[in-house]
Amino acid sequence: MKRAVVAGSAVLVAGIAVVVVGSREDPCPTTITFEGRAYVERRTTEGIAAGDMLGSATEAGCAEKGSFTLEFMAHEVDGVAPEVAIVSATDAGAIFLVEGATADDLPPDVGAVLIQ
Image (tube, rainbow, N blue to C red; front, top):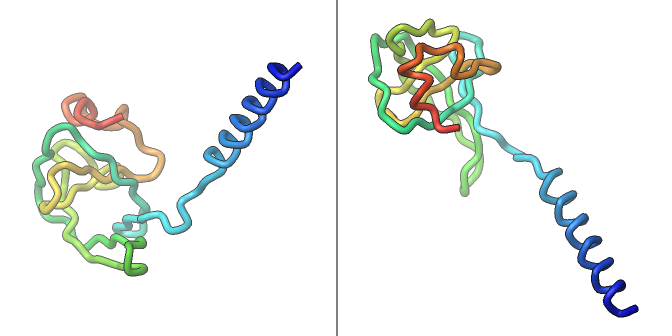
C-alpha cells in the first residue's frame, strides 16, 4: 500500500512540474525590426560575413536593469534578400531571420550553419 502511494505522488509531482515548465513564457522577448518587418535572432556555428549596409534596425527587449532599445546597422547576407534575413557587422555569430523564415529559405551554405 505504501508503495502505491509513493508512486502516485511521484507521478503527480512530475505532472505538476511539466505543466509549470510548459506554460512558462518570456514576459519581455527581444524583438528585432527592420523596414517594418519583425526578425528572430538565430545563432550560428560559424560567422556570417556582413555584406552591404542596408540601414538602421532596432533591437528592443529587457535586461537586468530594465527595458532597452538599441539601433544597429543592418547588413545584407550574400545571396539572401533582406526580406528573408539580415545580419549585424558587430555579431558575426548571429543571423536575423524574418518571422516565419526557416533554414530552407536560405542558401544551403548559410542554412547549414544555423544552430537548431
